[in-house]
Image 1: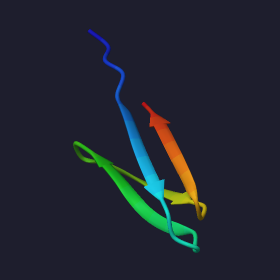
Image 2: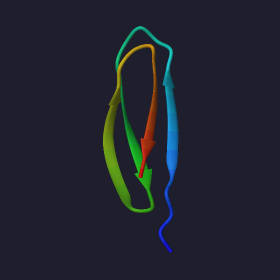
Image 3: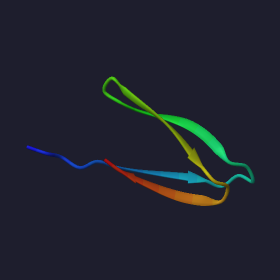
Image 4: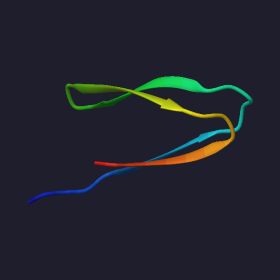
Length: 42
């Protein structure tokens, strides 16, 4: 059965933020611009 996961990230700062999204043993580098709400669907 395939499952879809969504992660919502909010950056309320004045600077872009780089972070790592980790699921099980997989890690992905992600950036979020300043003053943004980001939705990642995987």
